[in-house]
Image 1 (spheres, rainbow, N blue to C red):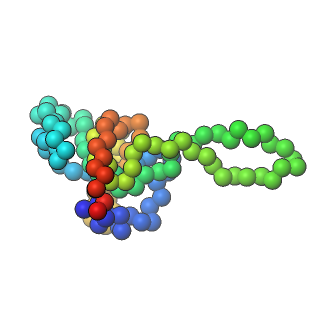
Image 2 (cartoon, rainbow, N blue to C red):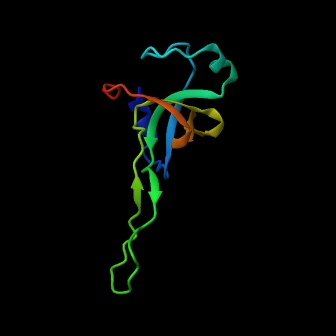
Image 3 (cartoon, rainbow, N blue to C red):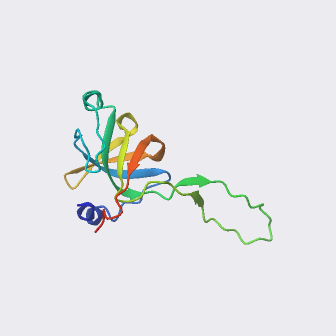
Length: 125
């Protein structure tokens, strides 16, 4: 299921600590057995979806001292994120930004808005 979305968004470059999520309708029970109470669905403050792409992580400042004789390197460094492609993410809907691409809805969500990740090791097979 995740593979069909990966092909259509190959050109997307996710920036920093954000993830691209394909939202899904809230169910009372996820495939892994997590029960989502009715209050979660009614308030719609929390949403779930599958992570399609991730950014490189949290950018960190360079620790190198600029010296005129040194070669200038502009390769940014990042602290990685826990989220991986294919994970089911439960996140705060209020922090997400909705976009539409090829008649499909996607959400751009900051990593800090993700409350829970459910990882199935066989999700991309």
